[in-house]
Image 1 (cartoon, rainbow, N blue to C red):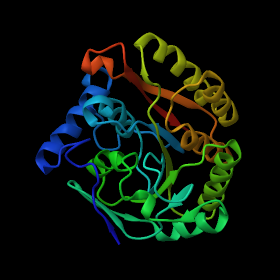
Image 2: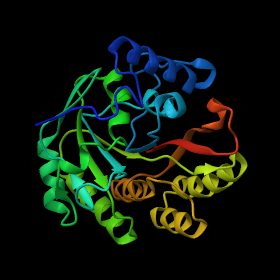
Image 3: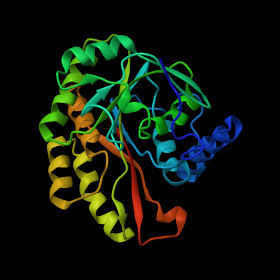
Image 4: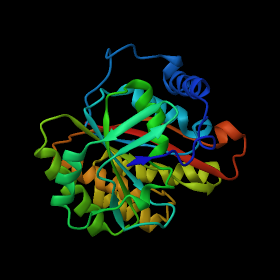
Amino acid sequence: MKRRPAVSGQFYYANLSKLRAQVEACIATGLPEGRRFSGEAGKEKVIGVLSPHAGLMYSGAVAGAVYSRIKFPHTFILIGPNHTGFGTKVALMSYGEWEIPLGTVKIDEELSGKILTEGAIIEEDAQAHLFEHSLEVQLPFILYFSQNVMIVPITMMSHSLEDCMAVGEAIAKAVEQTSHSVVIVASSDMSHYEPDDIARQKDKKAIERILDLDPEGLHRTVMEERISMCGFAPATAMLSASKALGAREAELIKYMTSGEVSGDFEHVVGYAGVIVR
């Protein structure tokens, strides 16, 4: 089964050369003073990351800073929110490949099977992924750096703490049974359509919980503060899995809002890039 791109030409360029140049520009602007990492020099081994999923013109600098910073694994487990409402509440596409203009990435069927075995809440469901953008927007960065990596795509419609923790536990157990390297990516934007100063205040509270490796605290803070962080459930699951896999610290790599690009500071979306190690 081949999953065709759903937002090519909307969230990122559909033309191969233009997309490659767009990703390269994001990488350059996402790093301090335009610094680029050459090869594996300076890159870090991580357990998990938080990366945004807006159009590359808005959040690409944050995503580029994250993916430039990390050593690439054999497989990325990609967990994103379900914006479309299609499919099951936690949906894993367990076989096939995903295509975008930069190339094609195969699904890690072995690891997918283990996650499905460990997580009763997680169901095999390709339908949920057909039109969802939150995972697809990670692929330009992943395929720019590596054409050999594999993925396990998971979308979450459920937001309950119990379900988030169950997803994290299942992923951790499956990764522990896997001999090759794995990085867990939570795809999320932060506050939506708030004034810039309010968005930054709210996002700071959520980011603090992420940096504390506190999945329960992140979930509670988002709910209590009414932070419109669309991927807080995937982020909670990622933190839960990362802690179970031995994570000891997290670092904020870059934060910005859409106002820095659009000039509209009255209705911004926040973007945070975090690595967990």
